[in-house]
Image (cartoon, rainbow, N blue to C red):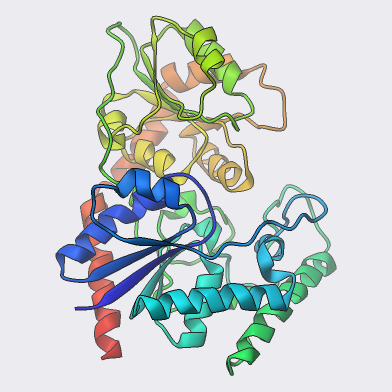
Length: 398
C-alpha cells in the first residue's frame, strides 16, 4: 500500500492533531502507512502517545515582526520566512528532505503552505486538510482578512508582490514554473476544504467544495458534571482569552452546573473562582460526549470545539484571542447560533450574553437548525469519503 505524509506547519494546540487522528486511523486500517510531520511535537506526544504512530518535527520559522497586525494571507507568510527568498529556500529544502526520508507518495497538508511548495517541487500530489482560514480564495491579491478596515488595493498588491517574489525564486531554484498569485500555491490534487460554508472564514469566497468536518479525535474522559440542577455548560478557556476572568465570574454568578477545560489555568485563578457549580479539569474531555450532554458552551472559537457543539445543536459564547478565531466567531454570530465577546472591547455585557446563550431559545434554535442541516455528515462519513478520494489520487499516480 502507500505511504502518506501529514504535514502541519502553522498553528498551535490540540485541534490540528485531534482532527487528523480519525483520518490517520482510517488510512492505517486500509493498509497505508501514515507519517506525521508536526509543528508541535509535545502536543502530538500527549494526544497520540498510545496510537503507535511515528512523527517528525516540522520545519518552522520564527515570526518576523512587521508593523501592525497581518492584513492578508500573503502578509502572514511574510512574517514566517517568506520575506527573504534564502530563508524560504531553507524551509522548503527541509520539507523536501522530510518527504524524501519518509518516502511519501502523497501529502495531506494541514495549514502548511511551505509543505505545499516543497511538494510542488517534488511533483508530489497533495490533498488539502485545512479549514477556510488556511486556504485563501483564488484571487490576486489575497483578500483583506480584516474587511471591517478598508485597505487601498495598492497596499494589498504590494504585499502580494513581495511574497510572490520569494515563492517564485524558490520555484526557479528547482526548475519549476512561476505562479501568478500566492493563492496558486493551493492548486493541488484535491482542494476541497474541511468545514461548512457557513463557517468559512472567508465569507466572500464564493463557490467552493467542502468535506464537512472532523471535530475531534475521540479521546478524553467523559465530563463529570456537578450534581446540581440547571442547564449544563461547558467552557474551554485559555489564559490568552482576554476576558477569561470575567467569564469565570459570570459562570459562578449564573450558578448552572459547569465543566471547564482550562489546561493552562494559573493555580491562583482556580482558587479564586472555586465554586460548587464549577468543575475544572486540565486534561482533554471527550468532546462528542460533552457536546451531547451539555446545553451550551463557552469557547475561544477554535474550529474543532466550535464545530462539535454546533453539530450537536448547542449555542456558543465565543471569546477569540487571535484573527482566525475572531473570523470564526463572526460567522457563528452572523448565523445566530452564538455570540461574540470582542477581545478589543470592554466585556461589561458578558453576563448578559452568557444568559442569552444559556436561556434564549433563538440561539439554541439556530444552532439546532445547523445541526439538522448537516446531520448527514457525521465524522465517519467524512473520513470514509476522504479516504476513498485519497486512494483515487494514489491510484491515478500508478
